[in-house]
Length: 412
Image (cartoon, rainbow, N blue to C red):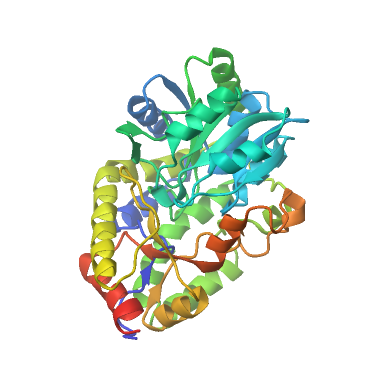
C-alpha cells in the first residue's frame, strides 16, 4: 500500500470535492444563517420541479422524512407496514416510532423487496408497503404497484439510494403515493445529514398534515449543525492522509471527542428514538445540498460509467454482478463473494475500503433484531445476501476503478 496515495472508499464521504469544502467553511463562519434561510425553500422547490404533482417537505434526516409520511397518512398503533429485510435499521425504526409494526419481506435478485414473499406476509392490518431501491437499482415497480393496488396499500418509495434513477423512463419517487430521500454522507447527494419527503398532490389532506408536521418541529441544536458542517472539512484532511495513518487517527480522535456525528446512533440499534429526530432541515445543510444538486446528473452519469467499466472487466474474469436493471444509478455496485471478510481485508491492505451494505440483514452490526421485530430465518434470501455482500465504489476515477479490479480480482 502506498501511504501517499489517497484512500479509495465507498463510504468515507465520496461526494466531497474542494468546492463542497469551501462551501462548508463559508457557512460555518456565518452561524446566523444556520437555522432558517432561503436554501431550505430552494431545496424543496428543486424537488417539486423535478417531481411534478408533489409537495415537498425537508427534514434533518431520511428517517425523519419517513416518520413524517407515516404520520401524515395516519399510520400508527395497530397498523402493519411491509418493508424488506436487507436494509438499514432507520427504516423499521421510523415505522416503530410511528406506533406501527414493521413486517419484513424477503428480497429478489436485485436486492429489492420480493412481492411474492410479501403476499405471504400481508394481513388485514397491513396499511402500506415501503419499496427500497437498493444501491440505486430500481425495484420491480410494475409488480409492486399491482400488488399495492390489489391490496389497497399505500405505496411509499425509499429513494435514499436512488435520486435520479428511473424505472421504465419514469423517475423513481414519482411512481408511488409518497417517497422519501436521504442526504447522508455517503448517499447520491450529500449534506452529511438531511432528508426530504414528497407526497402526491392528489392526497390533499395528507399533504396538509405533512406540512403541519414539519411546521411544528424545531431546528436541530447549533452544536449538531456544527458537527455536520465540520464533517466535509475534516474529511478533506482525512481522505488524502488516511493511508499514511494520520487521516485514520484524525478521524478516530474527532469521533471520540464527538466533533463529528455517527450516521446511526447507538440507541437506534435498540429501536430507541434519539432526541435529534425528527427535526427541521437547517438552512446551513440545505446550503451544502444546493451545490450537490447541481452536480446530480454528472455524479450519476459517472457512477453509471464506472459501473459499466466494472461489469465489462468482471465479465472477462468470469464474475457476474447481481441482477441489475436499466435506469439504475449505481450508488455502489453490489457483488456476492464467498468470503467477504477476506475480500474486504485484502482490499484494505491495498488502500481500498470496499462497502458492505447490508452485511447484517438489518444494518448496522449491533442492531437488536428482537427490538425491531425481526427473527433469524424469516428472510433467507436477505440473510444469504448479507452474509456474502460487498459493494464496489462507483464515485471514483477510471484509474482508481482499474486499481480496484486489479488488486481485488486480477491479483487473487
